[in-house]
Every structure is written in structure tokens, then in C-alpha cells.
Length: 377
Image (cartoon, rainbow, N blue to C red):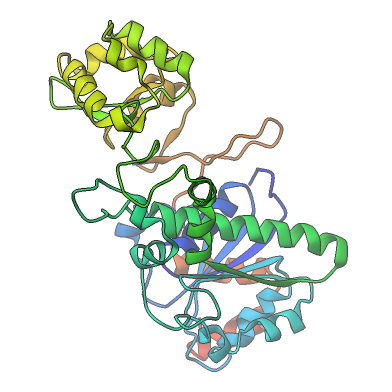
């Protein structure tokens, strides 16, 4: 196990989406992450495709059985971090709330991942990524003006505004704990995180430089120099030539000498200029535009699908994707010069790991045998 977080010990209470993604990030960076699963969740035929579960060992515990909470608390005594993503109050009902855990491990950082947060009028309501980013204002800004906002997959809420914010919060709290000796709770809400991801847009709106109307702004497809365009073969290219010198290079390489394009930053001209640029870009195939523009300062890239992206020469050169037991997946990121992350391992079987994990984390043979006899393990 290598990486900048080598030596950090993390307990993950298994959930879905942002919690596992956050735990995956810690495992990718070398932390020892133990995933507490529910019984019956492990399926060897399916588990290797669960990329979010890579890189950590697993223990299946029946949390409804007496003694299960005590087993987790025994692990907590040796942990730096606990990650959970249940609705508010669930961990408390299991006997594993922050007060109980911090009493057993005062320096513990207790990371909580929810959509609405631990408090507020909506805190206990169900929801998913699309609901959380809708409330933050982020969803309204996505898409074209002539239709409803489309779901931007679950990048903005689950992963960007959720998992990554939680990971940042946990690391900040661990840093503080190393100085103070005291742990604390990190309350990561996807509504908060999605709002924070929109910080620049809120600032631009306050300055009168961002409209509530979709497809009317520089970064939402309103500007002709920042959008995706169809090519002659039905594939797409992405243009992002914001700065005047890059815009000038785009026009030069595309052999555009139409004087109308001099009005780059006049929003009133953007719809017409978009039609004109689209008419130029549709005259060649995507590969032909790549040959002409890729690698220049025209701020150009081909729009690649899931099969094409891993094979692109730039991604290949950086080894941005790895093959783990036949499953092609993104490599750990970012890169470290002195403590690089290792290639992640496939998710392992909970029943195979359990005894070894508990032994490594200090539970003696008698305790492990009792947990099995009681049906906890």
C-alpha cells in the first residue's frame, strides 16, 4: 500500500454513490480503508465491476444483531476517520453516533455525507443528486433555453459537491486534529457543496455578468466560442476559445475571415455567430478537425465517448485509465511526485477478508469467534 495517505486508517459504513466514492479516494491515496458491509452484499461475479469499492478490504456485519455496534466501536478505537452516508439519525439508532464514537476515540474525524445536511427543514427527506443540485441553483443553469434542464449525470451533487467536498473536509479536520488532539464531525451536504461549486457564477451574477436565462451566458453554451458542435460525420468537437488570442487562433486555423466574428464579446451577436461557426465546423469530420486543431492554442478537443477516451494518445501517455482484473477504469488522481498512488485492487469478498481484517485491527480470536457464534459476523 503506497500513496500520500499511507498510515491513515479509515472505516467506511457501506452505502451508495458519494460515500463509496469518497472512501475510494482515500483508498486510492494509500489509506487503509475498511468497508463495513451488510451481510449478503458481496457477489464475486459482480463485485469486480464495482469500481467505487476498489482498493479496500471488507467486513460483513449484521448491524441488527446485539454486539455489532461494539465490534465497530472496537475498530473505531484504532481509526483516524469514519465515513457514513445514511439519513440523519440512522447511525445514532445503531449505537454508533458521533458522541459514542468520539468518546471511544477522541481524535476521530467523523465524516457524514447526506444530500440535505444533518439539519434543516429537508434534512430527513429522501432525495437524489438531481434534487440537491436543483435546490442549490446549479441545475437551473445547465442546458439549452428551449427545454428543461437536463441531469448532468450525478457529477455535481454526488461526486463533486458531495464526495469530494467530504474528502476535503475530512482532510482539513484530520490536519486540525493532529494539532489539537481532538476530533470532530464533518457535515457534508450535497446542497452546500453544489452551491459552493457555483461560487463563480453567483459572483458573476451579482456583478450583472450572468443571466438566469440558460444558453445566454459565456460558459453555458450561450457564447459561440464556448460550446460543442456537430461535424460532417455526426460526431462532435468542443470549442473553448475564451481569451482573444486563442479566439484569433481558432479563426485563423479554421480559415474564418468573416468580419462578423470580430464581435466576439457582444452577447447580442452570439446566436448569429453560433450559426455561422456551426456552418463551418459541419464541413469536416471530427478527425479532420483534430488533425487541424488538436494541440494548438485554439482551445479545441474532440468529444470522445466512453470507449474512445481511454485510447486517446494524451490519456494513454498519462496512463489516465487502468485495467484492473479486466475492468477498464479511471486511474487514481491527482499525481504525486514522491508518494505516487499504487494501481488500485479490485473489491474483495467480505467473507474472505473478515477474520483477517478484525485480527489486524486488534480483535482477538475469542472476540471474533463470539461474533461468528452470535451471527454478527
